[in-house]
Image (tube, rainbow, N blue to C red):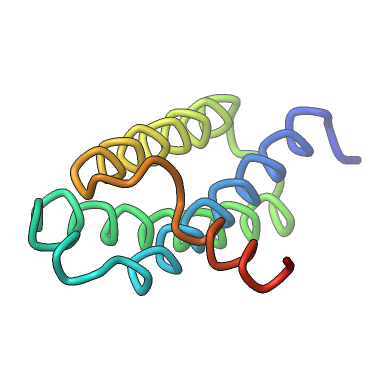
Length: 111
């Protein structure tokens, strides 16, 4: 039987995975000048994004196979998701962009 907390944790794991994939995609779109502005923040963003992908996949697989081990895991997923959001905001400020470069790329292809 699946509990509501397990469903919520699975959704959080999916959001963490999506946030990580977005961060990895953004790394390819930054120019060299943007990366040179603050290389440490950009590298931390890449590391955090890769870690988010890994944690998202592992958490979703764990919950699917064995259930939620503890309500604390739900809280930890939310905290990690929040940290990746703050890291992404810091990266935007350091590179001088106002929003995700992925949005510009998608808009250019759609319109």
